[in-house]
Length: 44
Image: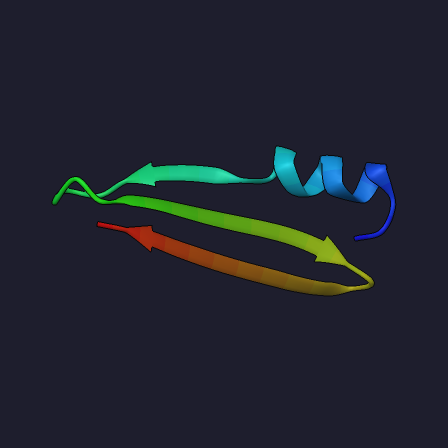
């Protein structure tokens, strides 16, 4: 993710989900060099 286009796609693919207990969960998906990366961050 060195180019601005790659970063732009990463941000565009991001989904922010609110779970039932009120914690914020950010799930990010990015497809780079044929590999799918999934990152999940939970904030309670």
